Image 1: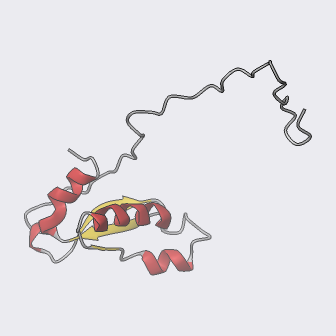
Image 2: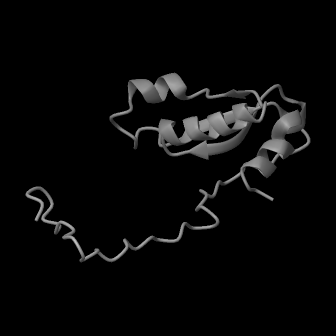
Image 3: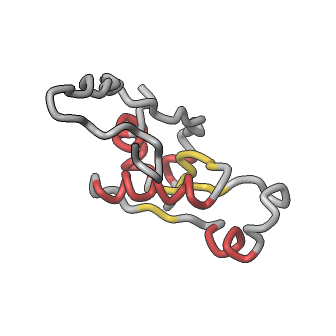
Length: 113
């Protein structure tokens, strides 16, 4: 028997049963985002808010996915959340902003059909 995890060693002539394999989930759980709807006035701005995230880490994941697809992003709350990361309730969100021309493509990419 293993001294670390107490599993029995395989003895000659007595094979251990094969390990059980969990079937991978065919569709990974994707986070759901609350997309900010755009008005016609919003479409005339330089940058618009696509989604708001609870933490900077969550926003970084969204930004990484968007940048990998060639969509430029901006986190206007990044520095503020880095300074007060110890208190999530102070502001409670991080805005992910993009150009209005990329809004529909970004929304489709993140699953907001």
